[in-house]
Amino acid sequence: MTTVAPPAPAGGPLIGTLPHGVVPSDGRSIVVRRPRRPSPTRKAGVVGGTLTALAALGLGVFLQFAGVGRLAEQRDQQVLFDQLRSDLANAVTPIGPTDYTGRVVRLGSPVALLEIPAIGVHQVVVEGTSSSVTATGPGHRRDSVMPGQVGSSVVFGRSGAYAAPFARLKDLHVGDAIRVTTGQGVQEFRVTALRRAGDADTGLVAGESRLTLVTADGPAFLPTGVLRVDAALGSPPQPVAPMVAAPPVTDAEKAMGADYSHTFALVLWLELLLVAAVLLTWSRARWGRWQTWLCGGPILAFLGVVVADHIAQLFPNLL
Image 1 (tube, one colour):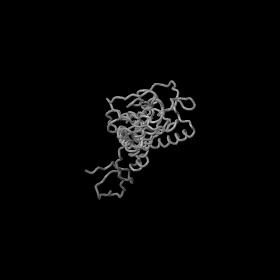
Image 2: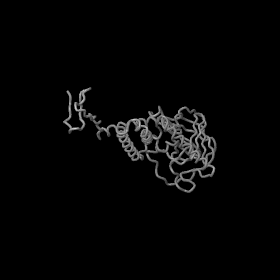
Image 3: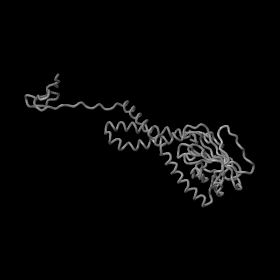
Image 4: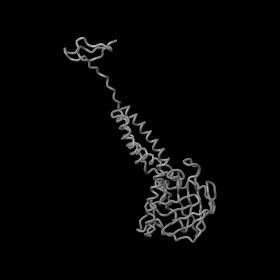
């Protein structure tokens, strides 16, 4: 069937469609209107943006655990090492719960250098054991003495994410050396025991110094328990710095504790990721696929990695 538009004024163009090869008898030109492509609805844009955001989030999580987290931890360790070296040279490294100014040591501050030659560990130890702190390196539990002092010193480390500095802790053997450099000098320990759930604690002899390294036991991200490695100091212990009244250790700072203090920031970043994904979907329909992905793809990938980093910090502090 041939569809012909209503007659146009005399001498005007014909608007409509005619069979192929047919021309008007009066010689007038033909103007054919092509149907406009329907614009995406608001609902379709939100759905498409949500799917795009989920894809970016999945990619961000994959990148986070495939290498971005390791690179971030290595960058943090380099910065911490430079700061620790400067503090040691200036004799201002904290040797207790307070720094040289008398203030409580800020969480995340470098306090020692930990070296375990048998498993290739060379890490700066920071103050605190919450998930966000152990993302930068092994953390010193703040209610224990500093390594090398009289008493028991406890250091937490991750076994899966953020370069997993304690992933090979299970490979240590009795007698392996552990060196710790603090503001009181270099202390050398020897491994005395590896303890898991149900194993008896040998206890601490009065006047001695013990170092306990703690991490998750079992496969990475699928822990079956907690692994503790005890080591005894082979030289006379250092004196304990005066203790001060400080907030008690929270559940987030204990073994396998999770830190939810970044939840609000995570929600904000998720909202920003969703908005960016919706704008990307709209731009793709109006501007073009390749132009949109070329300009907006890196932004979406960055937001996905940032959100994945905040999600990773919600995991327990030993993973």
